[in-house]
Length: 145
Image (cartoon, rainbow, N blue to C red; front, side, top):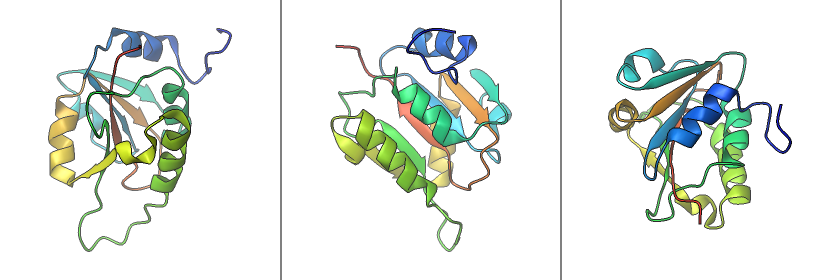
């Protein structure tokens, strides 16, 4: 255990976050996301038993969002016609508002297959047990100033 560091940030996750450089991306994926196939060229971290919001909150405490791009946070857009509940996005917006001086305006939505293409390029994917649909997000790392 470390003082001031969330116990949600395992040694393995902290190592990955430290290894990432400016503009590298990390996916925090819900339980339905194909993490293993999308992350076959990167690192897949299993965080079974945890949901996306608690992991996002812990990561935002130590992870700078890219200050050189307008929208360093990407959500998977709901497929047209799908009525899935996406209220979890409000939770993400509140967390990002709290952690990011630019506020929730740093969030963009990517069409499902565009999101998958970006996920394949990610440095790492965190596979969670999140049950909400469309709860996936991508964070792009910035610089510590």
